Amino acid sequence: MSDHLLPRAAFLRGAVAIMPLSLATAPWGLLAGSMAIEANLTPLQGQGLSSIVFAGAAQLVAIGMLKGGAGIFSILLTTALLTSQHLLYGMSLRSVISPLPGRWRIGLGFLLTDELFALTSQHDKQQFNRWYALGVGLTFYIAWNLFTLAGIVLGRSIPGLEHLGLDFSIAATFIALITPVVRNVPTVVCVAVSLFCSVLFSYWQLGSALVLSGLAGMTAGFLCNKLYRGRE
Amino acid sequence: MMVWAVIFGMGLLVFLNRYVFLEPRLPVRLSSNARQFLGFAVPGMLTAICGPIVFLPDHQLNLQYDNPYLLSSLVAIGLVLYTRNTLLSMLLSMAFFFLLRWWLA
Image (cartoon, rainbow over all chains, first blue to last red; front, side, top):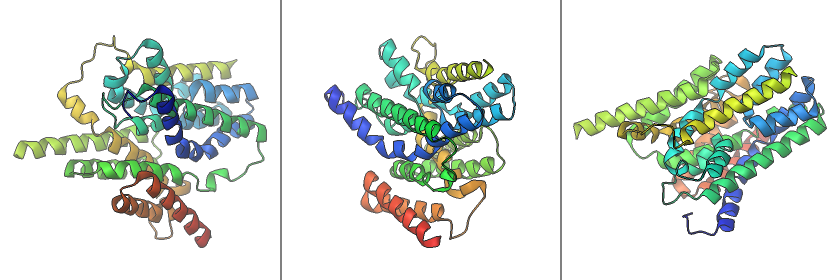
C-alpha cells in the first residue's frame, strides 16, 4: 500500500478494493437515473446530477424536492445539511492530502465520498498512496455514472429496486471495516452512541441525521478517552 | 434553467464541503485534541451510515429476529472477529443475508 508501489499497481488495487461497494450502490444509481426522468428532468440533467454533484443521498432528495416544486434555496440548504459529513472527512484526511499538488487535491477532493473515506482513512502519511486513492475514487465515480445512465435509459421500468436488499452490502462492508477498529472502551462507547443516535435521528427523519449522530458518537468516544487517560 | 442552477449550485456546495479542509492555505492547524477527536471519525461516521440500514429497513423500525439485516449484521461481526479477514467476512455475510431473505420470503 505504501508510496513505493508502482502507480499502476496501486491504482488497480484501489479499483479492485472499491468493487463490492460500487456494486452495492447499483440500486441507488439506477434509482437516481430513473427518478430524474420521472421528475421530468431531461436525460442530460439526470446525468449532470451524478457527474457534477456526485452525492447519492443529496441527489435523490433534491430530485424529490424538485418534483414537489421546492425552491432553489431550500434545496441547497438541504444539500448542505445532507452532505456536511464531508467536512469531517476533509479534516480527517487533511494531513495526507493537503501536501499534494493542486490537481491531486482538487481531483481527490471532488471524488471524496463516504466510500473513499472508508477505504483510505486508516492510512497514515507513510501508507497513503495517491494512486490507490485515485483508483478507488475514479472507479466509484465511473460506476455511479454508469448506473445512473442505466437508470435513465431503463426509465420507469424497474419497480421495487430499492426493496431488493442490495443495501445490505453497504452495511456488510462498513461493519467489516469498523469491527477491527473497536479495540478499547472509548471506541465501543463511540460506536454505541453513534448507532443509537443514527437510528433515533433517522426515525425522526432529521435532514442531518448522519452527521449529527456521527458527531455525537465521536464526541462520546473523545470524552471517554479523556476520562480514561485522566485516571491513569 | 432553474434545474441547471440547482445542479451547479449543489455541485459547488458539495465540492466546497469536500475540499475546504484539503486546502493547505486554509489557516487551520489541528490541535492534539482535534486529532484525537478525528481519530473516532471512522467508527463514528461509518456506524452512523450503517445504523438506519440495519435497524430501519424500508424506513420502519424493526428489532425482530425476522429482520434479515439485523441478523446478518451480527453474523458479519462474528465472522470478522473469527476469521480476521475483511473481504471474506463481507462476502460470507452477504451470502448469508440473501439466503436468509430467500428463506424468510
